[in-house]
Length: 469
Image (cartoon, rainbow, N blue to C red; front, side, top):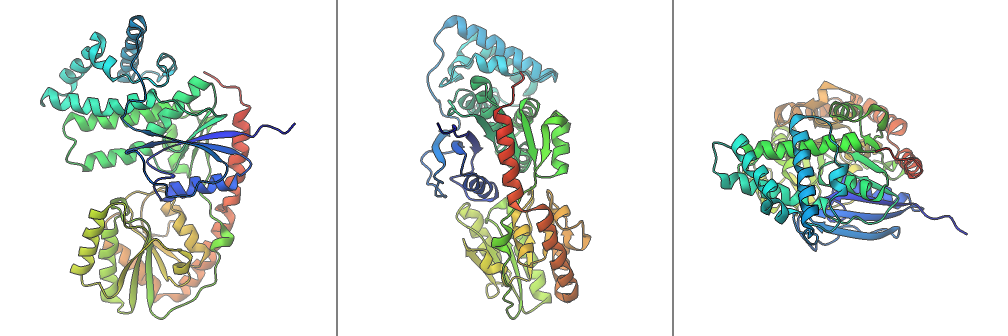
């Protein structure tokens, strides 16, 4: 009789297989290369019926998508059970407020799958008192309606995740904290199966940045959302069975928020070295490229501003924004207008989706202007093709660029970024040294074969581990 295939449920929020990007590409590649393991996708989406951006591999045996904030099922019917649950929810909130331990197993065990808690929360005496007292304590200067609708929005999301029914699997693997991590934790306790947490960036920090920038969320609402995301991360860190980070700095931040050191591990990103080791095809001129989506977090506007400075100093320079432009059409329109206003139209291209290897063949510099990144794969790809890099100081980028201050700049600093590009233009001998050094770095630390081997080992180790708690 053949051995039963291991089944892993990967849990994602706003990502694969509906959105392209670094995390989505990482997940797809992992699934494709672990073909002897079955995968189920449990995805959390902002809207229903999104088109797939990836052809799902044959070993994806289920794709279950839920709409965040939408009721997954019915309300609780037993009055006795309602009271017990609301008391446990109240006690859970008290523990959260006091900063004591983040035990959530009891509460999850009292919430049946396919249950939506909203009506219970607002119609029960305990639930309504929690809402009104929260407003009195935290939101005294703003109308109750502001607090209530912010509370409802956040808790509709939480309720939809806590009541959702996850697919049956041997391991629940969340690719972030947040709502994906909370869904994995609920599945861990309901099904008594291990919870593996992988973080590329730090979810709570990314959400906090978004919250601080928006004008829609005001007053205590900002603090409430920030606290929710931080609390979810702390809960996930304290109760996941194993946690991976892309680099040591992020692992240390996980430890600061309560991750047990013996359950954490650094597994860096990796790329297909053979696929990106390509022969260069030099072209006349000097070619600068950015590989990424045209979205605010990539800060394409700073890329364009940097290109203007370089174009004024290097007349033969040409610039390429290589990546999809359909994710935020308003931002794309702004970027096109900026190119026009800076009179870069003759030397700047938005290429759309492309086989990036065709550009790596001739690019002289790879530029990254993001305001937030984890460990961008594009640099590793470019290194294999002999393309040096200049970047903003985000995530693990300083380590990837060998902590070389010549090629690192603060976010939004177009002038410093341009200095790095111009230095490479004026120092071809230094470029040759960088090509050798960077390629060897990829071979030593960032071959994706090592990443896939480690995840396969980890899945097998977790599948037979005796769970605690």
